[in-house]
Amino acid sequence: MKMRRPSWWAVLLTLVGVIVFVRLGMWQLDRAQEKEQLLARFAHASAQAAVPFASVVDDVRPEHYPHVHLHGRLEPQHSYVLDNQSRHDRPGVVVFVPMRVCVDDACKSYRSQTLLVAMGFLRRDVGSRAMPHIPPVKHKTATLTGLYAPPPGKGFELGGNALAKQDHWPKLTTYLDLDQVAHDLGVPVYPRVLLLDPDPASAYIRSWTPATMPPARHRAYAFQWFS
Image (cartoon, rainbow, N blue to C red; front, side, top):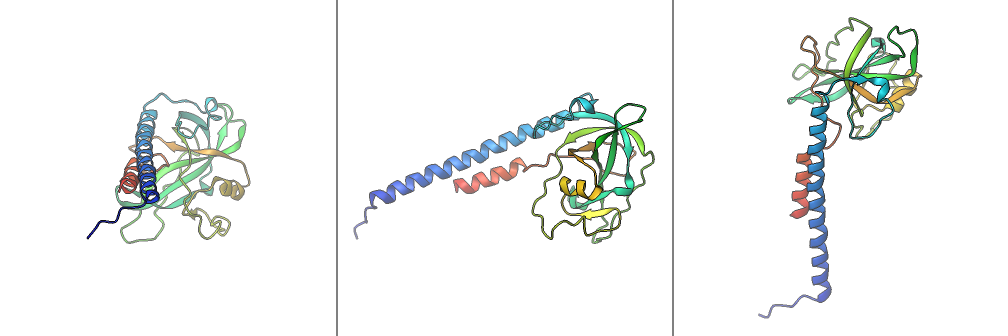
């Protein structure tokens, strides 16, 4: 039997397709490298000396994580609990507490915006959907240090604003929308959150990672495009 010679447009279409998919795969590999550099900067940021919060509050570059210290008053009576979180393959929640940031060390006046402070991760009991015990805040007025970082990714907001439907605290949510938090609190909220530094004496687990797609995911996408 004679082999049928493909038409010129079929050959051209194949070549274009190969070029496009190879370029897409290379793009994903580049993105993986960028994310590795981002993770390295994030890990390096915690080791830097903490700077005053006021000096970086307007720096909202998406891949910049300043290590800051600030003085303010925590408001644990208005806490938020971010559900569906995990650490080391253990399910749990991350607790966020609003903080009024002091203008001076004497805390005689506060900034107009409220800052959400990520207290850390709490494990759920295996097979339980009950809310973990949230440790009480010992000192409401405190000096804190941590990374001033973008909030966790929102993902798909199914079911509308969960905060507006709850009339008790702490409020449980599966995503953290700072605009909804601002509306819920009735005060302006900073566009970033404070990821507190680790504390061996704390009941919270504070192992933070940037709210971004990991390099391994990009490499998996690159493999798909190349395939």
